[in-house]
Length: 430
Image 1 (tube, rainbow, N blue to C red):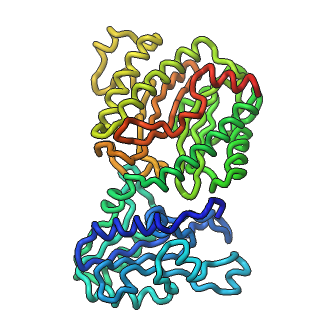
Image 2 (cartoon, one colour; image 1 turned 90 degrees about the horizontal axis):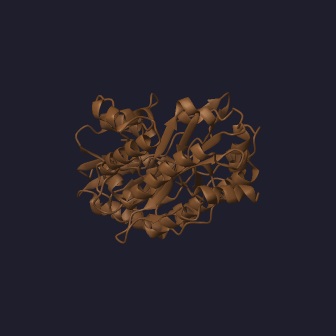
């Protein structure tokens, strides 16, 4: 691993909390992420399934966790199953965890070889009533390729049809939404690395550079500082490209006079940062660019203050829509009279601002949670208003990561330049 070891007490604490939420006489099984074929005889770089990492800290493929908190045989109340090290396999793929190493990382005393899983599961299930199975319950994401948890769930329901099957995802959502102090520290570290990458970009970007050259500066800084890499596909969008929300080609030229919108975040110990900044390629905002940027920044600051316990993303979204509408009138994009006459189902602001202002953040860039869920202390969310004026080849988004606390919002990226004069000064002194 590239990151500093995480104390196993974090994963022990997470498992204890899950056990408290499970019904009596229950079993839970968590499967690893698949190794996804890339092409030929290659796999994509492996990244562990987030729930399994949350409960074990194990990043190795083909790892399975079994939890049966009330089972009569204590060694199966928490059991981890891993690949048995094989000299030939290790010659080609590198070191595989020993049972002792898996115990040290996860804090699980009972570590078995993966070959023992089927017989162990049968023994535990036949003395249990409820069976918790995991699945990806993301509202906006549906994949054509069924992930391992889903495939195994189908198989197990055929083998053991008379158990009471339960959804594990709502329990994991409940737990993962509230970040513990060690988790917050890991997100802070991801933010610090992201800051270093942004600083490097401000010192190196210039007219004529390709967007992918900017991306190269970012990933280089990530790797130098122990990040796994990007937490998501980075967006480096200059000029008109910034008006495409998920532009990831990153292959055009950063032209003199353009703004470049960058949306990127380092992933550290599987926890990700998520930052957006928009800067002038030549180091100096034009008056129009500055007016548009400052409008977005003002909305950002107001929205950030709304991120307090009891509020919701949905309520902040609706407030930001009204704020942005007023800013657009001030910027001359349409008039107040035109707003009065607009089609309420197709409001004018939507031509220039068409996404939500926030989402949960953690082990996934779009982490577990709901826009209708009231904010609670310990949640981490993004704040990211934007403005996209395609006819002016101008797109702006400003985004920081916010920790919800009982004492008000804590901006985890407060040290990253965000004001126009801060950005211009940093670029001028490069």
